[in-house]
Amino acid sequence: MTKIGFLIHKGGVGKTTLAVHLLWWMKEKKIKALGIDFDNQSGLIRLFSGYEWEQGDEPIYRRGSVEVILGAKDNIIYDKSKYDFLIVDGRPEIDVSITLMKQIDFDVIYCPIKGRFSIEGTADIKKVRDAVSPKTKIIAIGNMIDKGWYLKKEFYKALEEMNVPVFKDQIPYTTKIAISEGDGIPIWKVGRYRGTQTRAVEVIKAFCRFNVEKKWEKVEC
Ligand SMILES: Nc1ncnc2c1ncn2[C@@H]1O[C@H](COP(=O)(O)OP(=O)(O)O)[C@@H](O)[C@H]1O
Ligand SMILES: [Mg+2]
Image 1 (cartoon, protein in one colour):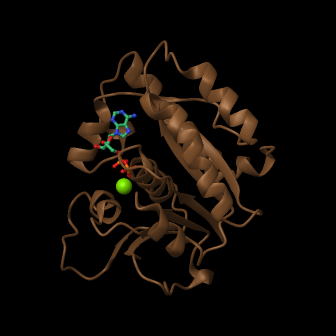
Image 2 (tube, rainbow, N blue to C red):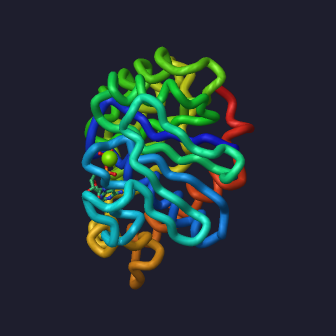
């Protein structure tokens, strides 16, 4: 089983957005996956279900080849033999998240960095790096990045100094994400794109492929 996590010391950077798109992708490709939602707000499970799942329902939601459970506890029990991928959505309280995440020996952890917070974000990645197993790959991914992003150079420089690889494309800021989130459907199903919106869809799809094909195995740290 391949274990992928989303973790960073910040809320609102795209952890849940990326995790849920990966799960939607796996559902469409009929890949057996388990999503674990560490956030008490249960955003992952609600979003993945298209808001069919509500607080108080059974703490599991199944659709096709994908299951999503609430996992904000110390001993998460799941049947490893049932899934090919495990996708874990962390939460902004990094200490809680790290404690929870230490239960799982991740293959890769993504740290989404929002354009405006990019330099602070790189320092936060170091905390994640120090807390998890050295065997886990830590990869940064730029999200909500505007054209002409003025911090780009500093961002890459800071990551290079920390020896942290970064996903090759940045996800632009696009209102299609809000529509996707509101409707509980992946961005590629929202339809009618142009310009930046098309670019956002392409990058998110490329990110999904990158993970399903385990391309991060070849990323140098
Ligand atoms: N590329 C993007 N463009 C526009 N809005 C985005 C983008 N990525 C995420 N968002 C929005 O930003 C908010 C925070 O994203 P979310 O994935 O919930 O962050 P986190 O899980 O890290 O707290 C959400 O409302 C989401 O719809
Ligand atoms: Mg979240």
